[in-house]
Image 1 (cartoon, rainbow, N blue to C red):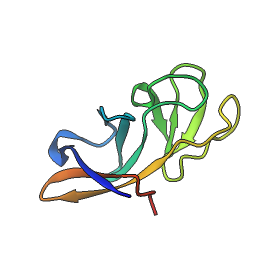
Image 2 (image 1 turned 180 degrees about the vertical axis):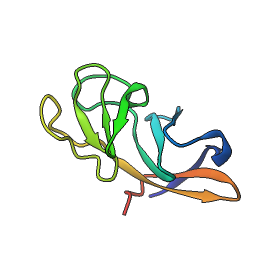
Image 3 (image 1 turned 135 degrees about the vertical axis):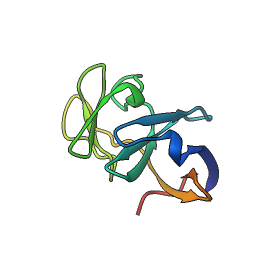
Length: 106
């Protein structure tokens, strides 16, 4: 079941940046070369914010133990993380970045 949440204005999320949305489960939205990706913000290996991680080649690296996750699928690239992070569909509606929480990225 989807829960649509406005994360920010698209103009407030430049390329290479991320924005955290504090919900029951925090979500982070990344802008990578104009493509928007939304994931749960917490690393599945240990409680760390992925919004504070580094993005390269459509992967986000956790700032705590360097686990990396694919922004498109949420899949970890390998240990220490073995459980994927949940992805969410994201769209732009009237200039706002909207996260469709609970709807996986297709």
